[in-house]
Length: 228
Ligand code: PGA
Image (cartoon, rainbow, N blue to C red):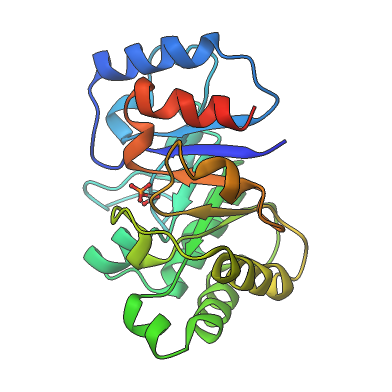
């Protein structure tokens, strides 16, 4: 069983979700499909697809205007939440410490966090990929509980460029060796129907986190079918 996780980022309307979910619900697969949607699309008709959010507050409740708590996510039926996505780290200054707090809060409320880590191109070129991943991971993972890790090189996200197989193995093996307990490890960054099958066959990879190509059935369904 592999994880195939869609990340819609700040995209999608109710009708677009409805169209894609109707198609998804017809597919027979042994893999686990999870759709991480904007908050506005979490509630409503989910056609028996597992849903997740893309962020969660590190606070329990209270005066945090605009934030969404893990308890609220649980309330609408979200079972997963992405934490520490590179876009959150970059545009919202999320530190490893905040990511760890968010992951801990999710677990406390019965939601499985998908914790993202990955190096920038500068860090890669300086030969720091392994040390960056180790530090991010060690400081971002919660003390206990179940979680998923997504290795997403920042430079591969939305760029159409993917790392070499060797680079993915090295990075994902680093994640695997750094984790105190075995947890699923995913790859994310410019996954499409042409590369999904090869990437998911790489040792240590338990699945994929997919952004742009998860938005429409004509790009997402071929990925799911290719790794059926
Ligand atoms: P991408 O995004 O598939 O569009 O590169 C992946 C992600 O950001 O999770």
